[in-house]
Length: 189
Length: 187
Image (cartoon, rainbow over all chains, first blue to last red; front, side):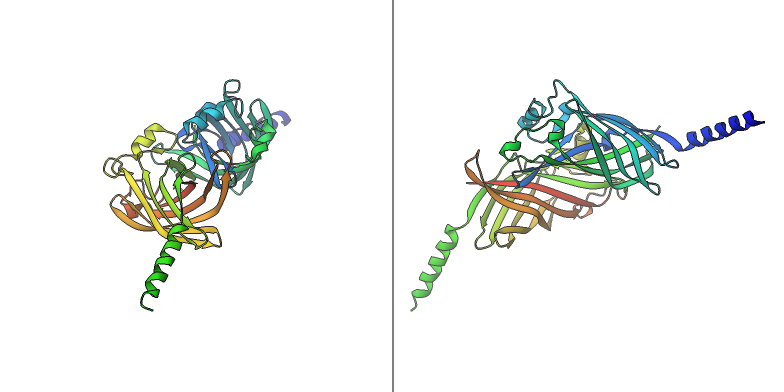
């Protein structure tokens, strides 16, 4: 009697887990990372990474999740072509040696059904450091075109670029601290 | 006594005319980013620019003016197919309305610091008041340019339906937040 009960319990657990744990694929048309950094204290320079891919696993009942997003550092787009080129050089992303940056978030914090923070690591220039993205909004909806559940939101993080070895211009007044603005939407598979 | 008044006016006029400083917008640091809420879930962003134009400021007198043009076809969302869609008639309509204009002669200063610019936007045949609130503002002597540079970050909000853009409502929201980075190089 003992063994079948355990097996049945395991089976029920497995079905329950399957029911709530879902995989979502990043919607590249509604997923962007934009950085903001002060320009000599006068105005804010912004740049956006245009090419990225990734997946999210989200279990709303177990309140767990995992996200992995890879960003093509050669797709940085500031609106100033010579700046884009400089950013890809060894002074900044060193895109020739490190063409991608990766965020892996495996600690999801929930408030009810809503994700409020995702903690993990950002790997940039081969350097891996902890990073927490805080949600400024989070929501799931049924996309009327795709007829699939789509979850996403806006996230922010503040980081010190020197922790990833990006220290260009610190001595001449370019700040170390910068902000990341993340728009993300992911479609249930 | 009759000629004292005109002389006084002339002096005032000369004094006022001598003080304003002209700045040309720096195309490397002058952009507008729009933000629109998508399905109440995430924020769509697109950059338009560089902004082109001139600013005159008299920071001592607390006065200023700006005249700016925005080439709307230079929209960049990070997806070229989306940019092309945005340029069509039911959205930005860049074939018919290639340029948006922004003018103001009402600068609100707090001491030497610019706090707000109360002006008008003209776009898609609509003329509407638009106030740019400064998030911060400062001037510096730029070491590389060897010139004074003034600028900051500003924000404003408009309703796209006021400009006849109803596509995607209400799933794509009506309020559009504008985030403006601007720096002007002293001429």
